[in-house]
Length: 250
Image (cartoon, rainbow, N blue to C red):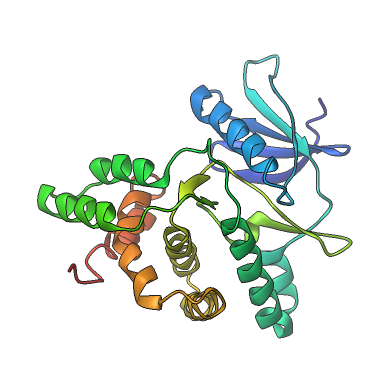
């Protein structure tokens, strides 16, 4: 394996290009179970027919670090295109929403359930017992769906190939469940990135195109924020926990 060309650096992992393959190399202390689950998620989503890089193999380096080998997609991230072409922002955002709606139209029955994952995360959140109880209760009251949810759908996880075809990367957080939870997560990701104007525009556009009430997505915000606060940077945890009380409970 050729590890000379770095194409992305993330927390606890580095992605390299080796010819027509992308090598995602995980740090030595990264959970093996999480790595294998990510590869399994990606393989299961492949079967839906979505445009995503194929998993080619899962292996280890000589030093014991795990590697997921996938197709390398030549192109630019949607985030970079939006930055380079601000006059096309609305056009790119429309592509982004339509792509997410396509994801939500798919089914992958073997993916983990979103509600199960969120219940576990809420139990681990740095919140008092009363707030955790309220969040668990609200989560249980939400409609049960089985739609494919990406879990980290943002413009930096979309590569637009040279022929204009968009490919969706990073399926480590994929689950099956209620699409509005996935939308709430994307909304919060825009806010975390300091782009509240695009967050609002995104939510309005998604709700209009999908005919989903904005109030319904907003009901998910405290639940999603609490479940996402368990991991990540301290400043992100503080921001996410500030959303837990934003929407009044019913």
